[in-house]
Structures are given as C-alpha cells and as structure tokens.
Image (cartoon, rainbow, N blue to C red; front, side):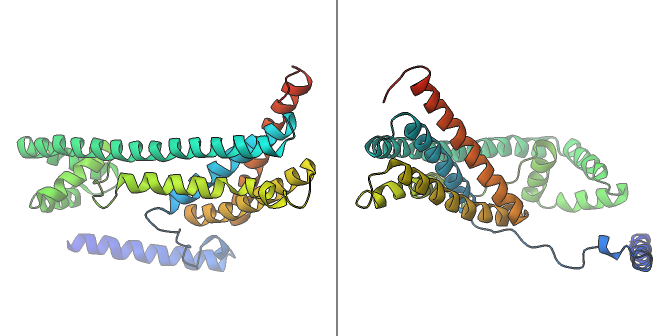
Length: 271
C-alpha cells in the first residue's frame, strides 16, 4: 500500500512538472482548464431527439417526392399523414421490441454468469484479474480488488458481465413500453412539422410552390433545433451538429424530389 502511495505521489509530481513545463513553453493551450460540458441526461431524451430527427427527414423526403410528381396539397396531406402514422407505429413498436429483447438478453446472460461465479469461482476470479491487468492495473492491485469483490456476489457477477460480455447490469427502472410510447409520440409530433405549412397556408394561397418552400423552411428550422439538442446529448460542437443535420435532411429531400421528378417526366408516371 505504501509503495502504491509512493507511485501515486511520484506520478502526481511528474504530471505537475509536465504541466509547468508546458506552460513555460507556451503549450498550455493544449491543457484544458475548463471542466468539459456534461451531455443532456434523461431517460427518454435520446428517444425524443433521434426519433424526431428521423421523423422530420422521412416526412420531408415524402413531401418532396410527392411535390415533384403531383404538386397537389391533397396528395401531400393524405399520403403524408398516413405514412407518418404508419412509420410512427413501426418505430414505436420497434423501440419497444428492441428494449425488451435487450433486457431479456442481459437477464439471461446474468443467470449464466451467476452460475459460473458460484460453480467456477477460482476461474472467474483469475479471469477478472487478467481483465484488470489488461486495463493497466498492477497484478497485486488487481488481485486485491478481486479478493474484495469475492465478498459481494452481486458485484462480482456485475464485474464479470462487463469484463466477459461487455454488458452493464439490467436497469429495472427502464420500461420498454414507455420507450415505445415516447418514440411514437416524438415521431408523430416532429414528423408533422413539415406538413404544418400546407395546413396553415391552405386558406391563404393556392400556390403549391409557396407551400413547398414553406415546408422546406419549417423542416429546416425543426432540424436545426433538434441538431442543437443532438449536440447537447453527444457533447458535440453545436454548429457542426446543426450543419450535419441540415445536410442530411437536404440530401434526403433532394434525392426524394429527383426520384419523383424522374418518375413523372422520364417514366411518364402521373399522380
């Protein structure tokens, strides 16, 4: 233990010396003095943001293809909302099934690991020591840590789950049906934004071009806002995240518009 403290003290002194030397050489800009910004946290934040992004891009792409081939607000609204509901149900159910399956797999793998720990304890302890050594821990320290864990079966099983299978313990607070419901609601809410311009402008103009341009602007605004939220979740640069989100939406919309235009003007298909 004393040797470990000495090593820690020596390491701390070396780090301090390197920092001082870097500052003297003008390289202090390489060392971050500010604490990194924490990402957004929340049980359903990711489902809301990423489900919303997918919904906006999908719905905007559909509007683009319909506008290029038929240029009818009725077609845009009918096909847009019907497709939105179908995709929202599919996404919500898919999220529910995915979360349920993930929990089931973790629970089953934990049962296997519990059996291994109870019936092959020496082997499991040895493997855990090797795992900590691979992470850079000294053999004696790794052995001491594992010996402490052997007093607590649940902790030992959790550590073996992480080391052997790369799985964290199952979060019993997570409710798969809630994840699915949140994804469905997010998809419906954000996916409907590109259609709002058509609904709002119907009493004021008959120009399909004006309605389509307004849909582009509304979609771009919604994508930019969700891109900012995505940056907060992933701790990314806000400008880069917004630009990437807008670019993905523009590419999807342009591709869908070109397909609709080609089907109408080249293949001769009329809506």
